[in-house]
Length: 202
Image 1 (cartoon, rainbow, N blue to C red):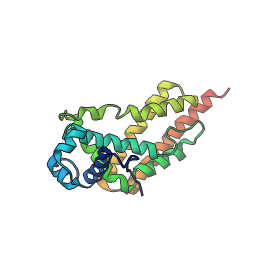
Image 2: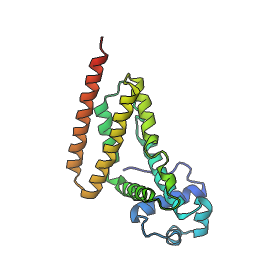
Image 3: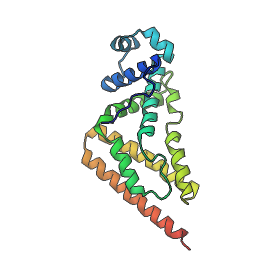
């Protein structure tokens, strides 16, 4: 089971955020009003506005908090030098593709779409949506001897592949096909890493 509860459960804002995350993951946010959410959480819409500024501000906080907690709970982020790429990537994919996370990933893509459409107060969601994952990985891979431009390009591709396959998985429910596609990506990347290592050998 994947748990995404906050660490500071005593703070009123954190309690509201944790409960809002659980509710939004189950029900989505497209047609959800702040008043309806407040009633479901046993609070007032004024209290939610006090803590989060607006309905959209709360949606952004939900999605960014879930992503942050995923990074914190995922061992080996960033990876250490010498960690096998395939083993690490399969571990990550198993984590992200777990059915327990599907509701949160639906929420992520829902808010991603709203931000791309320029919905009010959602643009902040795009801040760091790639770089927060990319930069720690680039630093780690460069430390292992891969030139920065190549590391950045391949790791950015990896983020795109992972998110694309998650979207595929949510749309089709075909776990086996998504796993096979990820295995194919891992095999291609391992081939690239092996070729790069051979070029570095004296």
